[in-house]
Amino acid sequence: MVSAEREVRGPGPRPRGRAEVVAAAGPVVRASGLARPTVGQVVRVGPSRLLGEIIRLDGERATIQVYEETAGLRVGDPVEASDGPLCAWLGPGLLGATFDGLQRPLGALAERGRWTLGAGLEAPALDPARRWRFTPLREPGENLVPGDVLGAVAEGPFEHRILVPPGAPAGRLRRLTRGEFAAGDPIGEIESERGPGLLHLAHAWPVRTPRPVGDRLPVLDPLVTGQRVLDMLFPVARGGAAIIPGGFGTGKTVVEQTLARWSDADVVVYVGCGERGNEMAELLTEFAGLEDPRSGGPLLARTVLIANTSNMPVAAREASVALGMTIAEYFRDQGYGVALLADSTSRWAEALREISGRLEELPGEEGFPAYLGSRLAAFYERAGRVVPLGRPGRVGSLTVVGAISPPGGDFSEPVTQASLRLAGTLWALDTDLAHARHFPAIGWTGSYSLYVDALAAWYRARVGDDWEACRRDALGLLARERQLLEIVQLVGADALPDEDRIDLAAADLLREAFLQQHAFDPADAWRPPVDQLALLRTVLRARDGLQAGLRAGSTVETLSHSPPLAELRRARSWTGPNVAERLAALGEELVAPVADPPDHPADPPGKAVP
Image (cartoon, rainbow, N blue to C red):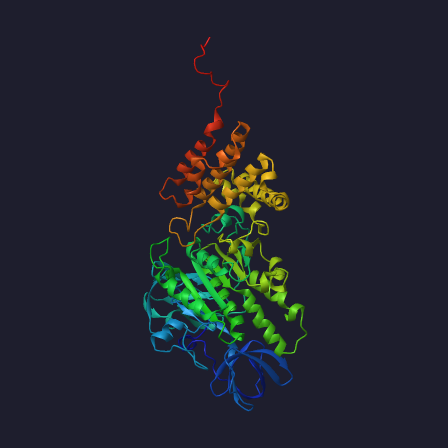
């Protein structure tokens, strides 16, 4: 168990030995004189006590990755070693908070007038003065094992479950107290083979070590995003992984922010890794005023924000992603569905490249380290649907969505290619669609989902039996449009047969009425899957109606400008509880002109009917 004294003091290191700086190259510092150093050990460097981490040992010298600006550091400056690795502090107070990549609370520091992060700044991640009302769920005398739920505190509308930390020894509960406590206060005591140990509301966990689980489960249901092109065509499973590569201006950040607001995850951890400072400031300002569509309360009540902007030291980017993953795993272990949104993993990979270069390691493709693929694999493989340790039995999930910023939109670059081998869903952003103001600019020709077969049973039971057929027909129509557009570029649209022109009109309707979605329109920003499928089904019925009308003798121009089609184009803005029923009625109207054709042509005026 972590002692109460260490909990109160926060993640700052406890001096154990002294050493001095012997060389420095940007964020990479070499020191000698450390007593029994270990890889991953946290150190404080220089008079300002800059936070760093040992990443290499070479005889008596230790190579340190410093997470803060090292300007002004001198040879001979002191180095202080701590007694452990870089840890995240996990407990009540995480939700609604904004941290930097080292888990310093930016909001709390701003309230104290600290508008900039000074060198060596230390601040407890969890407010030591804030008190929480703890309700125990265990009785003295019970046997406890790691992961057991001790009780809960109310954090806004959220039930924050307090766990026996993983790695703690099993033992018998001696006492567990009801009342109000700070994060570092002891709430109970356990007797184990190691002797008595104190229990607290919060505990520490190394950010680079995945939290253990009881079992891993297959994925069964999707992470519902409310975005039609994602949920209907390229779904991601709860516990799965998705990537969003795209060039500058294609809408990666908007997609991730949309997921943060509208996805049905219980908890959202948003990591802004290496993003522009003004963009992160806008995000923080916007999130503070957003309403959670699920609860009606503030969106921040179920969100943890980690802001590591591009003007912060590059080495801290790598720590920010690991910190976000550890916080996400903590809420997963409570039995919640968590979405980790990382924007972007390219900036994190750039930090790896810079540190690797300063370490004089042999470069791989485009200068990235040879271990880039393994680092990305270690990140994405922490996603999953699991049975956490401890009792009562519960199921949690962690879904990872990583944005990628390939230079020039080139998907053949190393970060994108390495991520493609790891993620089950690809949402490929298309520059041409973005320039045409088609948003979300997710290209249907390059995107895919490997979870379709696993999620088919859920869609059949919850959404509609025809989801797979409608999805297949929609993708087939879009592929047919691509073929026809290549011909149009050669001979023009007027040279196409009427049947092909109908396919082009139907594909245009599919793009305009279904695939486009307005992220800032209250009516169109989110749709439940049932309404999404109803709209897709109606668009496909419109295509059938157009084809039938053509066979009945109508012209392409007449069919393309029919009033029901105009109404279908406006259906994205429909509101109310009966949208699916209204769309079904519109579908009947779209095929009504050819649903019951006459058996013979009408008689001319004045002719007697025999």
